[in-house]
Image (cartoon, rainbow, N blue to C red; front, side):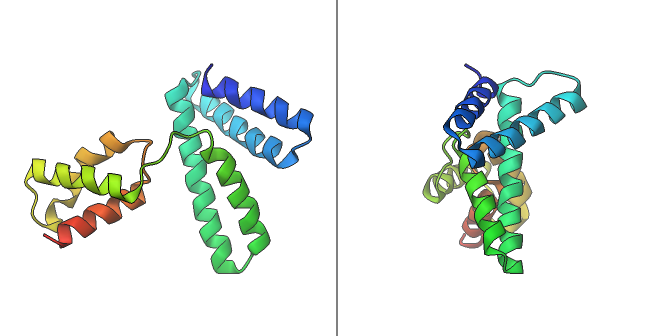
Length: 149
């Protein structure tokens, strides 16, 4: 069963269970997927659907940070609830230690010794970690490793 089909079935289940928060969150995800399909004039496969979900999760994280700065805890809680639902459909994210190990290996492989090679390391590393790690965290870990050399 594809991710898109899973989302559709879970939305129906949420409707039947009366879980309006989950129903609404999944509805927004399905709408974003549909919009992406219309814009690209194609039907998205699982990889494309996961890319849309990742983008939606990133938007929620940014909104949470904005609402926190603005002192809007009720809006922040709503976004956090949606983010948890979105993340339940995404592949398990790597933790900092796993990212650090792969980044150190890539740095050694490329022979980069200072921050000037940051772009080269990120260019090689991000395709390996696509969908498994947040780009901001990867950037932070690589920068930290290069500064300590």
